[in-house]
Image 1 (cartoon, rainbow, N blue to C red):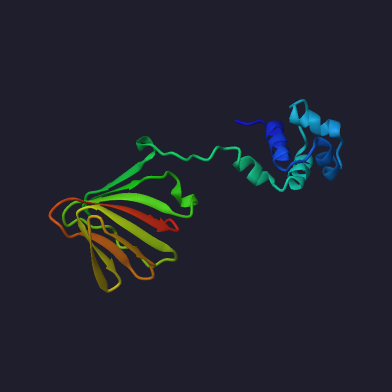
Image 2: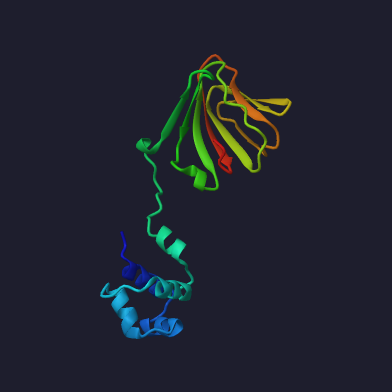
Length: 180
């Protein structure tokens, strides 16, 4: 994990500021900025807030950004929910996707399996049928979607999927905002 002084230095350099320029903006001494960056002293919370403000940041972003954003997700990251009553399996491909703008899932439905009824909500939904055939129920309408086809809609009506084929169906489904 990156130390506070190292991170302040990196942010200062990204802003093309010298230690003296940052110190002047914060009404601190160049020596103090140097000591903070070299981890020889720690700023008080109030001083850290001032430094971050001069760097265009704040405490929340400063400490949240300290965690490297995960880019690649492995099978061990996936959360799986089996639903024997509905005849399906949902795999959340991205852990904690609720904090993101979209939520991708990998859905598997046995023949005659279905998803839970989803109430209308804001956002958009996209699905790509990887195998089998599903019926998309959107309000009072039904749409047949086969392997290699996709669907895209505003979820302003109740909706769910049903596997209408004789074989297992799988769908890559992306929802925004996250609702699963």
